[in-house]
Image 1 (cartoon, rainbow, N blue to C red):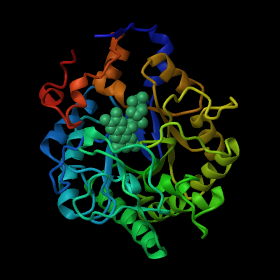
Image 2: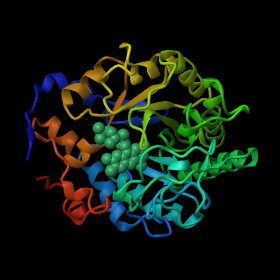
Image 3: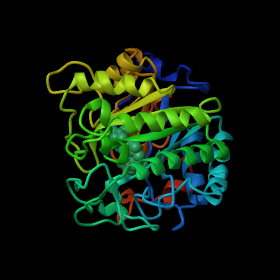
Length: 379
Ligand SMILES: Cc1cc2nc3c(=O)[nH]c(=O)nc-3n(C[C@H](O)[C@H](O)[C@H](O)COP(=O)(O)O)c2cc1C
């Protein structure tokens, strides 16, 4: 095991102070990042395995959990076979069991609502994929989720399709609230549908949804406003934003900070409670010319709660992000898979493992038996 030494405790205090996102109180600043684990039934119904998996993170100190990307309708939104959905009563009811398990620990739970767009590589409802334009994503499908070869070229969405997607997000948000989630996170990142609209080379439209940055962020902002209108009084609403994509990790907004100055206010003006930024290296400047991180830009232009994610393995980096005021909560993906008790270990000064066991990702990245065997044994 590659171990990281334990840092001085006092430098980490910022991670363990309480905060809130909208009306949701958090007992510390450490969240589990959304991670697709394809462990639902073939019909997208969450399972007992998922209930144990999520509860484990909550039991060992994560104040906030964000679900894996969860598909929102029985049409084009599903991205992966065995991905959970939040599109019908059976899925909602099964999520309620998962949510109850997390709530029993005192942690809070947000559902990530996802339309996979042209990065869909496994959909049990339809073979077509949708995108802003008929432009094939770069790269290849992910083997750890049963994909291979290039992505499909998506069908260009018409106005009625855009309306359909907006309704699906609203329906899923209502089901999320009914399942007992404390919040919903709209997936506007990583190359999925809303991010594809934002992306210059994937969106070649000439209508109100294409061309300028203001037009390309329009659909994400409309979805945020729609969701806030139906559930915003009851639960927290936020959006995840990134530059990189599953299909193109190096992508950058071509207008740099000028784009950020349009994108973040357009999202904040919808009444959402938070923005969740994710970058491969979240501590580095967002753009090649130096300057601020994407999280700091989100804070500057949104003035909302910010969750920051990306390579925050070292607790000192995570604590600095909070202490700087650029972010309110840190979300951990791979560091949490490597150390399911990351908050407890950091709090009590124990060393951290730097590596995720390779068996977790192969041959399929589903939840493994050892992940749910005993929540407190972390070797
Ligand atoms: C196995 C796996 C599955 C992921 N699935 C999702 C997902 O469903 N939704 C999402 O927004 N990001 C997803 N991500 C990205 C993570 O949330 C996170 O952004 C990424 O791992 C970088 O953060 P880290 O350095 O803390 O791992 C996934 C990452 C991994 C490793």
